[in-house]
Image (cartoon, rainbow, N blue to C red; front, side, top):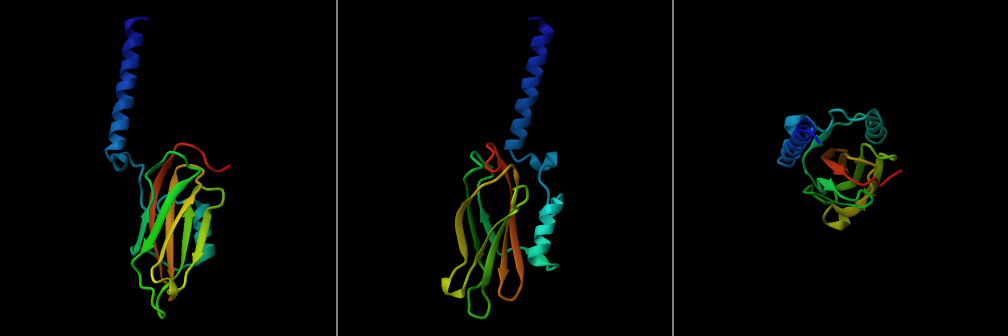
Length: 160
């Protein structure tokens, strides 16, 4: 092996290490990998939102979405959704919807709730085809829509 080949490998490894370090330290924003909830949303995901919610505005807030940033096994991704919205007879969380932009079936689940629950939260596991935005949408009895979203990176394909 000559010096040029050895230097090329070292340069490649140094650049790869630097890239991994930047990403692990939150440099995704610097590299443009993370965008807002509606930025670059696939048309199929927009269609699902229109089918389920029409033209109603979905606002940020009141929803907490807890799931791993990196899912080592996308066949089983734990997810916890909760909201601070009231669960009173006149105003309550009617449903929680779960959407994964790049799944074969984008609308993953819908959970119907009643005020008798006292608190609105869902703890479950989902499958993901590949790295994607995961969106939890809370629908109130008055028709308001609130959401939270998170970009989840996967390493093992879970859906076909």
